[in-house]
Image (cartoon, rainbow, N blue to C red; front, side, top):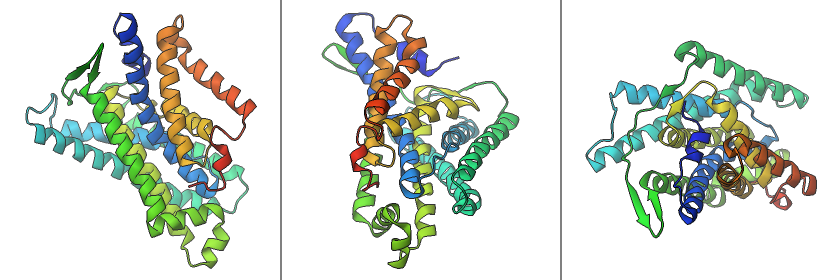
Length: 321
């Protein structure tokens, strides 16, 4: 079965090319991790909840994207460029809509009812929701992994000693555009200001006329939608759909959010890219690196939290979103 470790190990065999190729892979994976980590950090920044079902929200989007591709009978890259772009946009919209709607539904019917409960209650509910989402897909699609069709052209651009895959360029551009759009939304729109106000003091925001429930629901919607975009990236890049996909990747993305400073959107992005780079370089340069890469990632996380418990950008937590 193709895994992230397999992708990380697929590199050239000569010195400088290996290093730059692993940097390319690390940045690409980091962009995917950052998109999922943003969902964790947005929700935590608003209501201080670790949504452990977020990884399985991501997994649901990977499954539904595969269902749509199979329904359209797409098994190879479209020869027409505009057809390819249209297909990718359709899949991204579907992935974002599915994951956003699922996250919105969880908030509306589960987390909102537990908002005033002891902190442990919504945390346990999130873990329970995670198992429910996994079990439904396991019963529906089975326990085995399913290959995602190769729908993106296998084309690369040579720059010096490195061949950069067009897919990697697409992934990085897509992730950066979405991150910039989120930043602009939060900073420049009225709803973004409401999100910042709710993050700082929900009671005061409500007194100033902010609809706190609507703001929190929108936060879940946006966080889930970003995970849906990451689901498209994952399907294109890794090419395997499995009901436990969200477990490992969700855990890595959560680690990225904590590493950067959970509650801080720039911290989530920084943490995502750092973990992608660390994982890629550890896989290449450590003996038996594919087995040790995650241990290195989490070991560095422990070290950072010991030395700086709030994360790398934790000093900016009061201005959480």
